[in-house]
Image 1 (cartoon, rainbow, N blue to C red):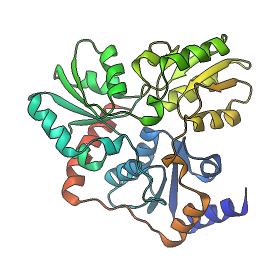
Image 2 (cartoon, one colour):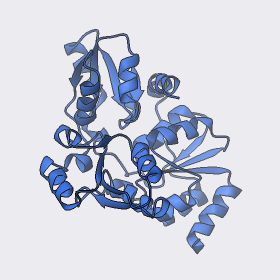
Image 3 (tube, one colour):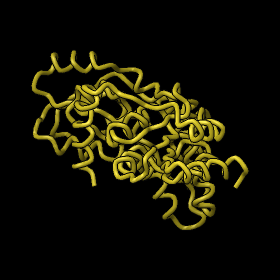
Image 4 (cartoon, rainbow, N blue to C red):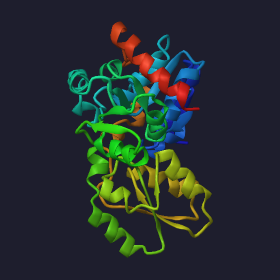
Length: 303
């Protein structure tokens, strides 16, 4: 442990802070976090936390989610401008327009969205729970926002539903094209292709396995030594697998699978936030109350 990591650990203990980090964070951040996981794991741990303060090493929607599920806690986001480009592609007014266009349809909102968008949606989902959430609804007609690629994957798994997609996407996952998947398979013919459902449909169709970050990690870690995988998600997952599954060979689907916003948080930022207990995430009370219902529905359906 470095001196800076030791300082972060000491300050967190002294100030009763739970540090939550996403898998896409740099490894020095993951090493000092009490919880490392995907969006849903972070949300569950935030909701159950006993600590007074939650420090979120991720992007803004993750910190907002923690505040929604733990409203009495102080929630810190060390780098306030660490945003999610997909979440920024949609606003509450866009959801309301789709509701007018498809009256009677239920709105399923991907967790990668703002509190304001969640406030005008019916139920939230993560990449690991999206299919389950859609199937849990009585309505046959669904509005899925904001990720059109995840929505297309859900539609392929729920043919009994009529799904209307918003035109949003993750710029990182969306850059992978069919030619990239074919080239990776040619370069590594013995490797299984595992992709995140935020990838384009033509990439998803070529995959041997499709699922959340947690799914990809678990699949590789459970494989026998010597197994090979092409990883179709943010490069931080490959970095983590180099430590947790050293006997497996993992290749990134293509270059450029790096979320700049997820890499904005540094150990210096974490230590500063622990020292000052700022910057804090605050939400409008009315918006928060409505958005919380959307999230609580998700937590109730997904164990």
